[in-house]
Amino acid sequence: PRPMNCWMLYRDTRHKELKDANPDLSVQAISSICSQDWKQLPATQKDEWRAKAQAAKEEHQRMYPDYKYNPR
Image (cartoon, rainbow, N blue to C red; front, side, top):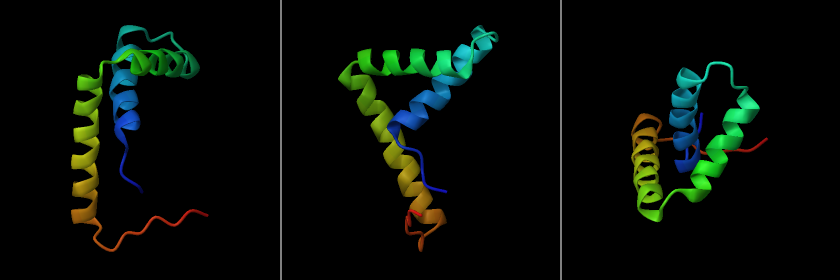
């Protein structure tokens, strides 16, 4: 699998937080909230998620050195 990008990492973390706090929310509702929150996130906080994504990418490259994305 491909490494997660900054949005995917943010959404995954935020989804878990929202689902724990509001178990009755649908996946669609959670995605909408995550999207709105991401758009309003300050650039400094987005940079933190970009750094996490870069670290995930580097770890992925270490684990799978011959990996090449090949869309179907």
